[in-house]
Amino acid sequence: MANTVIGSTIVVDGEISGDEDLVILGTVKGQISLRENIVVERDGVVEANVETATITVHGSVTGDIHASDRAELRADCRVVGDIHAPRILIADGASFKGNVDMDA
Image (cartoon, rainbow, N blue to C red; front, side, top):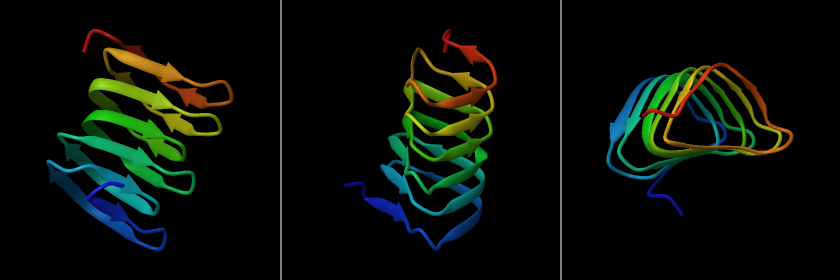
């Protein structure tokens, strides 16, 4: 389990930065910059540009994603924005609208 969890009823409007893993069950708006891993759970909503090592999306992300290692879009997720990552996995059933740049 991650060190930090944003609960399902929590709304964060602003900037999140740090060196820990993050699990998002609620809503984050603004900017996310983490050196570790982010998991956006099924009911999680991110309306932010994201910079991280790895991101796994089960929920919804609107904004650009910059991952230094890997971006994973799981089945039934919805992502609108550009993805910059050296490794990208888009599962069958994922919804993605944007551009992919693997020269990260």
